[in-house]
Image (tube, rainbow, N blue to C red; front, side, top):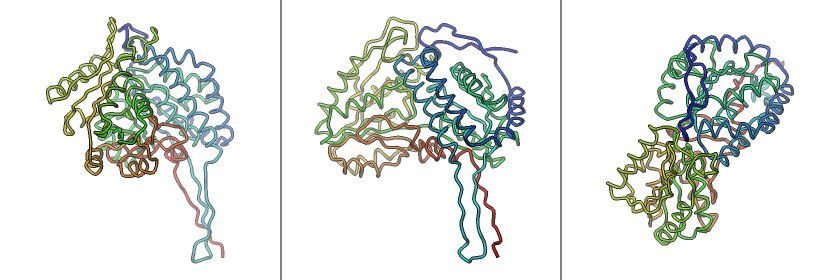
Length: 459
C-alpha cells in the first residue's frame, strides 16, 4: 500500500508516514462498520455510556502524549493543544451521559382510541469527515454522539493531521469499542474516499466539518440518495464593541476569539467592529496585546504557532496585501521567529473600510481587521451582510443591550462579553451557509438518530 507523509508545519520535518488509502479501502471500511452495526446498536445504553466514559478517562490519562502529537502535526501551541485535548475528551463524557437518555414519548391521539409510542433509533453507519484545525475535538464531537446513539462510523481525518484521529481510535478500542465500530481511513484522495461512502447504500448518515464550498459539493452528492446530512461549514464571525463596553474585557475576549489556534478556527473573529468613541483606545490596547504574542514552534513555548501550510501562508499574505492596497493600515504586528515553518505574524489592521475585501471571506489566520462604526442600525446591516452565520461576539456594558444586539445578529452562536462559544453541552452550529444541524448538547445525539412511532389501536 502506498503511503503519504505527515509534516510538522513549524519545522517542515516529516513526523510520520501513514497509509494512503483509496475508494476500495473506503468500501472495505464500510464492510466492517456495517458488520459491526447490529451488535453495537443492540448493546444497552448503559454499556455504550460506560465505554464512552472510559474513553474520556483514557484521553485524560494520555493528555500529555496527545497534546504533543497535536502540536507536532498541527503546529498549534502547547497551551492550545492541551486545551483541545480536554475539550475533545469532554465530548466523550457528555455523550456518555446522554447515551442513557435516548428519549421517547407516549401519548394519546386527540380523537381517542389510539396511542402513539415514539422511539429514537440509531441511524446506521455514519460517514464522518473532519478538518485539520482541531484534529481531536472535531473527531470526538462526531464519534461521541454516533456511538452513544448506537451507530458505527467510518472516519476520514484531514490528510494534514491523521495521527491524532488514529490515536483516538486506538483509545476507543482500549475503552471497549468493538472491532469495526470505528474505522479510520487515512488518505490524500478525499474526494474519492468520501464519494465512495456517499454512493454506498449501507451508509445512512454523513457528518462533515469543513469549508462551505466542499460542503455544497457533498450536499449535491448526498441529495442523489436523500442521505441524512449534517454540515458544519465556514464562518465570518463579527466582534461588536459598543461605546460602553468594558475595554479590558473586550480586548481580552477579542484576543481569544481572534488568536486562539492562531485564528485557524471557523468560529474565529474575522471582522472587529468598534464604536468610534472607543476605537482609538481599543486599537491601542489590542495592538499592545498582539505585539506581546510570541510566535514560533510549540516546543519553544510560543503562544502562536505556524499556519497549516505554505498555501495557507500565501493566501493570508495576499489577503493582507490586498487590504493594504484598498486603504487599510498595519497598525500592530508581533515579531516573527527565525524558523523555517509556515509562520505569519499576528497582525492588526486599522482604517479598514466597511466594504473591504478582507471582510468578505474567512481569513483563517492571525489577522484582525478593525472597522469603526457609529450608527447601530448600519452596524447590524454590515454585520449581517454575509452569506455566513456561524458565530458572533458582542461586548457591551449594559447586558440587556448586548443581548438585544446578539438576538439581531444572524448567527447560530453569539458570545456575550466573552470570546469563546464552544461547549459540549451547547448546540454548536450555524445558519445560512454556515451549515445544517447541530453538534453537542442533546441536539448532537439527535443528529445520529431516526424517529419511529407506533400507532396502537387502543379500543
